[in-house]
Image (cartoon, rainbow, N blue to C red):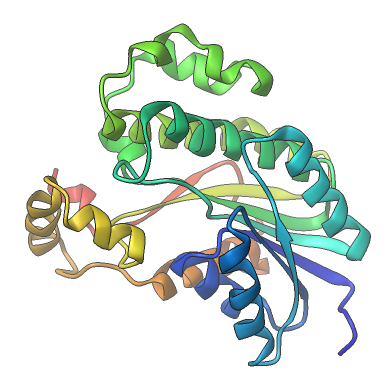
Length: 267
């Protein structure tokens, strides 16, 4: 099957990444990237089996050269018209340093690299989290998260004082939301848009791990009080992504869309 001149890039092979690939894939070549090569090839094959054109690519999103190579590979395949960054770690999956390295630095590296190759009319979506709105972040730290050059992000002094992985997660996701604002200016110079999505609890393997943690009962209580009264699905996020990369959202850039079923309204 021949490749399509339009290229859709998706980082992360988890539940959200796979749902987004299925939603955005028709009519484009999908470059799906993940650090875990054992997951990458089976996911790519599952997409091929339902008719998608897929190029798997191993990447370390916390490494600038690895991310630049991913961006070049995608650009060499055609016009990069959509970039969706879903890769990340939850508070139960890693220590503070690793969460900041992957979630904060990794997203910034992806934004920088693809901001240089995104096609005119293209769009990007970065998956943040409602934790980025819920975890308190001092205004001084917000300024640094937004304005510090990517290569210096992890050297922000306040990051050394983060007390717990759940705080590291919230701070990193707040950083994602803030940096998308500034990225919208640089992406806009190429005639492209970029936004973030802050999901609530979306039922993926990562979320199931969090539901089994000590905060799981609180997550269930907030869900029951919310306007929808349910947890989200990867397809809920894929639908929101499709809107943000599509023509209907052509006047939307540099903003964060909450897709949380109304959970944040209960806090």
